[in-house]
Image (cartoon, rainbow, N blue to C red; front, top):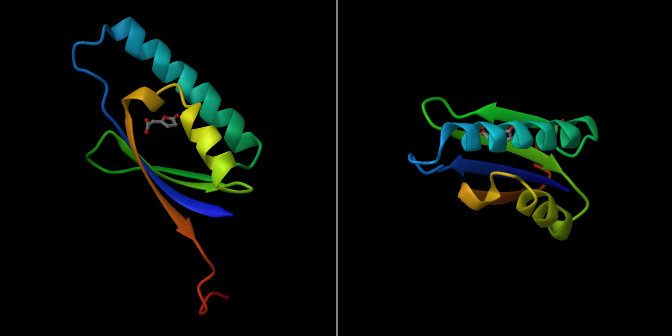
Length: 91
Ligand SMILES: O=C(O)CC1=CCC(=O)O1
């Protein structure tokens, strides 16, 4: 199942930089592991925002929730999920 996911990151401005840098490094490693496994085939930066638009390819809602809630940045994210279905005009 494919899901369109928007993640808005809201790190507190007063978080110490070393702590923020460590969380971001953990996030990158976690994300790239899922990308190598084919679970996270697309990620794009939203221009002008600390946000991304991603496509997840997972078995079901429960797998998506498990992957998203495991994100190191999850406690500081607003996440919007849109389930995707086949479009009848798609080739
Ligand atoms: O920077 C972001 O958009 C948050 C993020 C998700 C995966 C990753 O590597 O960074």
